[in-house]
Length: 403
Image (tube, rainbow, N blue to C red; front, side):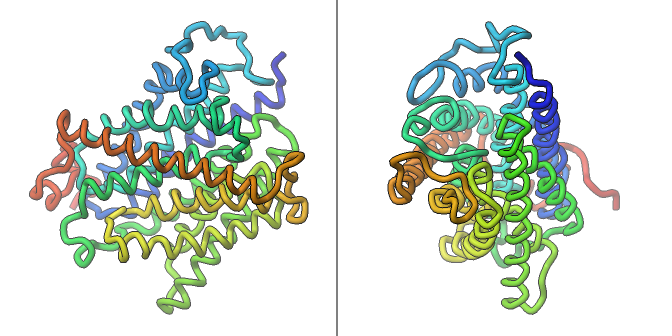
């Protein structure tokens, strides 16, 4: 029987998570690039939103949430075949569960946009996103949330530390490496053209993340309430951590740095949000702010990979950090719900690490194959002249600003 309270909340959460991509993530990324590429980034996010929605309906939802296979679902729910209007998923209609999960399937490939902005062919964006959703996201989603082998192993991932952030972060790093750096990187790469836009997008993401994490309880109860609270605490803490580090390092705290810390805190709390208490949220914010900040330098300076908008350092590392620390912070000592009977912190850490490592390996292999398919079918990188002129006009025949 439909629970009206749960259904009302998940209807709201679904809208909030869609709001994270359209327009939250789109504006966040658009403000970070050069003015000649703003529409290109907005187009990537909008097109992926539409493409992922149709792909989720056609095949990806069935692969993620049908059947009892250990590694991937079956094809019994292609185009929602056999799912009636009255079909239920727990206490909510399955059509609503489908829609809520669809918004996750939209934002995850959209996160990867940040790694390849300003230099990739639009056709490659579409092909890579569709194939990635089918062959990377859907199987990992089944492993963790669809009753697959990581679920059976007992992995904790409340709202997508592994399913969303590790998958997107690792694949983003692979694509950035295979695509190569932007022209003139790193010396001639210009700073974000619209920091105010970055802040507006980050704020939309922050609000939308309440639906992302608290909605993952799939009920309107205490788990959702605590998930919302710890999400906010982690975001606020990581923002301050990033601000302080920048202030001490450069003498001036930046707006872009502050809100980048916000996103790091949000990514870090995501896998733990339904399992920890306020102290856990605070600790995860501290950890996410520090670890993600220094990983930005590690990727760009040490490894010299132009992950343009720091997808791996913020989302991949943040998601992995939260996924590991939940094994510790789930303890009632920190206000968490506690581990299951017979489960120790070390054994759970092993399970969490297994989930991260397996996902990393699969993402690297599958993403490399997908990129090579795109090279042949659509081409991969734009011509040098197109990159110099900007993708707004060269790829889409429009400009973001009238001069």
